[in-house]
Image (tube, rainbow, N blue to C red; front, side, top):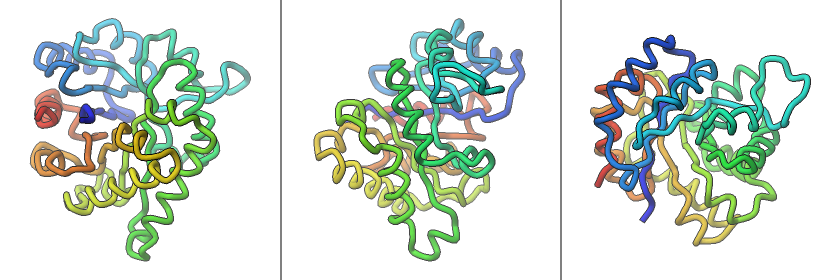
Length: 251
Protein backbone atom coordinates (compact mmCIF):
# COMPACT_ATOMS: atom_id res chain seq x y z
CA UNK A 1 0.00 0.00 0.00
CA UNK A 2 1.35 3.41 -0.97
CA UNK A 3 1.94 5.87 1.85
CA UNK A 4 -0.06 9.08 1.24
CA UNK A 5 1.68 12.43 0.98
CA UNK A 6 0.39 15.95 1.56
CA UNK A 7 2.56 18.76 0.22
CA UNK A 8 1.81 22.42 0.76
CA UNK A 9 3.07 24.80 -1.91
CA UNK A 10 3.29 28.26 -0.40
CA UNK A 11 4.29 29.82 -3.73
CA UNK A 12 5.42 33.45 -3.20
CA UNK A 13 3.82 33.87 0.21
CA UNK A 14 4.84 34.38 3.86
CA UNK A 15 7.49 36.43 5.55
CA UNK A 16 9.98 34.74 7.87
CA UNK A 17 7.89 35.54 10.95
CA UNK A 18 4.70 34.25 9.31
CA UNK A 19 6.44 31.07 8.22
CA UNK A 20 7.82 30.38 11.69
CA UNK A 21 4.42 31.02 13.27
CA UNK A 22 2.95 28.40 10.94
CA UNK A 23 5.66 25.82 11.68
CA UNK A 24 5.31 26.21 15.44
CA UNK A 25 1.53 25.83 15.10
CA UNK A 26 1.67 22.52 13.19
CA UNK A 27 4.80 20.79 14.48
CA UNK A 28 3.19 19.03 17.44
CA UNK A 29 -0.13 18.33 15.72
CA UNK A 30 0.96 16.37 12.66
CA UNK A 31 0.37 12.62 12.27
CA UNK A 32 3.33 10.25 12.27
CA UNK A 33 5.47 10.00 9.14
CA UNK A 34 4.74 6.28 9.31
CA UNK A 35 1.20 7.15 8.19
CA UNK A 36 1.62 10.18 5.92
CA UNK A 37 4.47 12.24 4.47
CA UNK A 38 3.90 15.90 5.26
CA UNK A 39 5.81 18.52 3.29
CA UNK A 40 5.87 22.30 3.11
CA UNK A 41 7.43 23.72 -0.07
CA UNK A 42 8.48 27.24 0.87
CA UNK A 43 10.15 30.18 -0.87
CA UNK A 44 13.90 29.67 -1.15
CA UNK A 45 14.78 32.47 1.26
CA UNK A 46 12.92 30.64 4.06
CA UNK A 47 14.23 27.13 3.51
CA UNK A 48 17.14 27.01 5.95
CA UNK A 49 15.30 28.59 8.86
CA UNK A 50 12.39 26.15 8.37
CA UNK A 51 14.62 23.09 8.03
CA UNK A 52 16.24 24.00 11.36
CA UNK A 53 12.82 24.13 13.02
CA UNK A 54 10.95 21.30 11.29
CA UNK A 55 9.56 18.76 13.72
CA UNK A 56 9.98 15.02 13.44
CA UNK A 57 6.80 14.65 11.35
CA UNK A 58 7.43 17.50 8.86
CA UNK A 59 9.83 17.91 5.97
CA UNK A 60 10.67 21.01 3.97
CA UNK A 61 10.76 21.24 0.19
CA UNK A 62 11.79 23.79 -2.42
CA UNK A 63 9.58 25.09 -5.20
CA UNK A 64 12.13 24.89 -8.01
CA UNK A 65 15.81 24.36 -8.76
CA UNK A 66 18.25 24.45 -11.66
CA UNK A 67 19.74 21.23 -13.00
CA UNK A 68 23.33 22.52 -13.03
CA UNK A 69 25.66 22.10 -10.05
CA UNK A 70 26.89 25.68 -10.31
CA UNK A 71 27.52 28.37 -12.88
CA UNK A 72 26.42 31.68 -14.36
CA UNK A 73 22.68 31.29 -13.74
CA UNK A 74 21.73 34.48 -11.95
CA UNK A 75 18.87 34.02 -9.51
CA UNK A 76 18.87 30.22 -9.70
CA UNK A 77 19.44 27.59 -7.00
CA UNK A 78 21.40 24.40 -7.58
CA UNK A 79 20.56 20.91 -6.31
CA UNK A 80 23.76 20.91 -4.28
CA UNK A 81 22.64 24.11 -2.53
CA UNK A 82 19.31 22.52 -1.65
CA UNK A 83 20.97 19.33 -0.43
CA UNK A 84 23.34 21.19 1.87
CA UNK A 85 20.42 23.28 3.15
CA UNK A 86 18.70 20.10 4.31
CA UNK A 87 15.76 20.19 1.90
CA UNK A 88 14.07 16.82 1.31
CA UNK A 89 11.74 17.58 -1.64
CA UNK A 90 11.50 19.88 -4.65
CA UNK A 91 8.54 20.77 -6.87
CA UNK A 92 9.45 20.50 -10.54
CA UNK A 93 7.49 21.50 -13.62
CA UNK A 94 4.70 23.40 -11.91
CA UNK A 95 2.34 24.92 -14.48
CA UNK A 96 3.20 28.42 -13.29
CA UNK A 97 6.87 27.74 -14.02
CA UNK A 98 6.02 26.24 -17.40
CA UNK A 99 3.80 29.17 -18.36
CA UNK A 100 5.59 32.15 -16.83
CA UNK A 101 9.20 31.01 -17.13
CA UNK A 102 9.00 28.86 -20.25
CA UNK A 103 10.13 25.63 -18.59
CA UNK A 104 10.23 22.73 -21.00
CA UNK A 105 9.70 19.01 -20.46
CA UNK A 106 13.34 18.47 -21.41
CA UNK A 107 14.55 20.87 -18.71
CA UNK A 108 12.29 19.16 -16.18
CA UNK A 109 13.85 15.82 -17.12
CA UNK A 110 17.32 17.21 -16.36
CA UNK A 111 16.06 18.60 -13.05
CA UNK A 112 14.61 15.23 -12.01
CA UNK A 113 17.94 13.54 -12.68
CA UNK A 114 19.81 16.22 -10.73
CA UNK A 115 17.44 16.12 -7.76
CA UNK A 116 17.70 12.34 -7.44
CA UNK A 117 21.49 12.54 -7.63
CA UNK A 118 21.36 14.70 -4.50
CA UNK A 119 18.82 12.54 -2.62
CA UNK A 120 16.05 15.10 -3.06
CA UNK A 121 12.60 13.72 -3.85
CA UNK A 122 11.12 15.38 -6.95
CA UNK A 123 7.42 16.23 -6.97
CA UNK A 124 6.87 16.27 -10.73
CA UNK A 125 3.86 18.28 -11.92
CA UNK A 126 1.70 17.68 -14.97
CA UNK A 127 -1.62 19.11 -16.08
CA UNK A 128 -3.79 20.36 -18.91
CA UNK A 129 -5.52 23.65 -19.70
CA UNK A 130 -9.30 23.97 -19.88
CA UNK A 131 -9.08 24.30 -23.67
CA UNK A 132 -7.12 21.06 -23.89
CA UNK A 133 -9.63 19.22 -21.70
CA UNK A 134 -12.58 20.51 -23.71
CA UNK A 135 -10.81 19.37 -26.90
CA UNK A 136 -10.39 15.85 -25.43
CA UNK A 137 -6.60 16.23 -25.44
CA UNK A 138 -5.99 15.38 -21.76
CA UNK A 139 -4.32 12.01 -22.36
CA UNK A 140 -2.23 13.36 -25.22
CA UNK A 141 -1.01 16.34 -23.17
CA UNK A 142 -0.30 14.43 -19.97
CA UNK A 143 1.26 11.52 -21.82
CA UNK A 144 3.64 13.86 -23.63
CA UNK A 145 4.61 15.67 -20.42
CA UNK A 146 5.26 12.49 -18.45
CA UNK A 147 7.11 10.60 -21.18
CA UNK A 148 9.44 13.55 -21.78
CA UNK A 149 9.99 14.28 -18.07
CA UNK A 150 10.82 10.63 -17.30
CA UNK A 151 12.77 9.86 -20.47
CA UNK A 152 15.80 7.58 -19.94
CA UNK A 153 15.41 7.37 -16.17
CA UNK A 154 16.19 4.02 -14.51
CA UNK A 155 13.07 2.32 -13.13
CA UNK A 156 14.52 2.28 -9.61
CA UNK A 157 14.84 6.07 -9.72
CA UNK A 158 11.32 6.59 -11.03
CA UNK A 159 9.96 4.77 -7.99
CA UNK A 160 11.59 7.42 -5.77
CA UNK A 161 9.65 10.28 -7.36
CA UNK A 162 6.17 11.68 -6.72
CA UNK A 163 3.87 12.88 -9.50
CA UNK A 164 1.34 15.67 -8.97
CA UNK A 165 -1.55 15.95 -11.40
CA UNK A 166 -2.80 19.54 -11.37
CA UNK A 167 -5.38 20.56 -13.98
CA UNK A 168 -4.27 24.08 -14.80
CA UNK A 169 -7.86 25.32 -14.99
CA UNK A 170 -8.40 24.33 -11.33
CA UNK A 171 -5.30 25.93 -9.77
CA UNK A 172 -6.29 28.86 -7.60
CA UNK A 173 -9.61 29.29 -9.39
CA UNK A 174 -11.91 27.64 -6.88
CA UNK A 175 -12.86 25.15 -9.58
CA UNK A 176 -12.06 21.53 -8.80
CA UNK A 177 -12.17 18.46 -10.96
CA UNK A 178 -14.77 16.11 -9.53
CA UNK A 179 -13.31 13.34 -7.41
CA UNK A 180 -14.17 10.83 -10.12
CA UNK A 181 -12.48 12.88 -12.86
CA UNK A 182 -9.42 13.44 -10.66
CA UNK A 183 -9.25 9.71 -9.89
CA UNK A 184 -9.63 8.74 -13.53
CA UNK A 185 -6.91 11.14 -14.64
CA UNK A 186 -4.51 10.14 -11.86
CA UNK A 187 -5.13 6.56 -12.97
CA UNK A 188 -4.16 7.50 -16.51
CA UNK A 189 -0.96 9.12 -15.21
CA UNK A 190 -0.12 5.87 -13.45
CA UNK A 191 -0.85 3.93 -16.65
CA UNK A 192 1.77 5.98 -18.52
CA UNK A 193 4.35 5.08 -15.89
CA UNK A 194 3.23 1.44 -16.19
CA UNK A 195 3.75 1.50 -19.94
CA UNK A 196 7.21 3.02 -19.53
CA UNK A 197 8.56 1.16 -16.51
CA UNK A 198 6.27 -1.75 -15.66
CA UNK A 199 3.55 -2.53 -13.15
CA UNK A 200 5.77 -2.78 -10.05
CA UNK A 201 7.08 0.78 -10.47
CA UNK A 202 3.64 2.14 -11.37
CA UNK A 203 2.15 0.68 -8.19
CA UNK A 204 4.91 2.21 -6.09
CA UNK A 205 4.87 5.77 -7.46
CA UNK A 206 2.57 8.16 -5.56
CA UNK A 207 0.25 10.30 -7.68
CA UNK A 208 -1.08 13.40 -5.92
CA UNK A 209 -3.96 15.62 -6.98
CA UNK A 210 -3.75 19.41 -6.91
CA UNK A 211 -6.17 22.12 -7.92
CA UNK A 212 -8.29 23.96 -5.34
CA UNK A 213 -7.95 21.13 -2.81
CA UNK A 214 -9.43 22.20 0.52
CA UNK A 215 -10.80 20.69 3.75
CA UNK A 216 -14.30 20.47 2.29
CA UNK A 217 -13.29 18.13 -0.56
CA UNK A 218 -10.18 16.32 0.68
CA UNK A 219 -11.96 13.32 2.19
CA UNK A 220 -13.80 12.52 -1.03
CA UNK A 221 -10.60 12.89 -3.04
CA UNK A 222 -8.66 10.65 -0.65
CA UNK A 223 -11.32 7.95 -0.88
CA UNK A 224 -10.35 7.32 -4.51
CA UNK A 225 -8.10 4.46 -5.54
CA UNK A 226 -5.61 6.39 -7.65
CA UNK A 227 -5.18 9.52 -5.51
CA UNK A 228 -2.35 9.25 -3.00
CA UNK A 229 -2.49 12.74 -1.49
CA UNK A 230 -2.39 16.36 -2.52
CA UNK A 231 -0.21 19.22 -3.71
CA UNK A 232 -2.03 22.17 -2.19
CA UNK A 233 -1.64 25.91 -2.63
CA UNK A 234 -3.99 28.33 -0.86
CA UNK A 235 -5.31 25.82 1.67
CA UNK A 236 -1.75 25.20 2.92
CA UNK A 237 -1.22 28.79 4.03
CA UNK A 238 -3.24 28.50 7.24
CA UNK A 239 -2.13 26.03 9.90
CA UNK A 240 -5.63 24.89 10.82
CA UNK A 241 -6.61 24.24 7.21
CA UNK A 242 -3.38 22.40 6.41
CA UNK A 243 -3.68 20.18 9.46
CA UNK A 244 -7.15 19.11 8.35
CA UNK A 245 -5.79 18.16 4.94
CA UNK A 246 -2.93 16.14 6.39
CA UNK A 247 -5.12 14.30 8.90
CA UNK A 248 -7.59 13.40 6.14
CA UNK A 249 -4.79 11.39 4.50
CA UNK A 250 -4.53 9.01 7.44
CA UNK A 251 -6.65 5.96 6.76
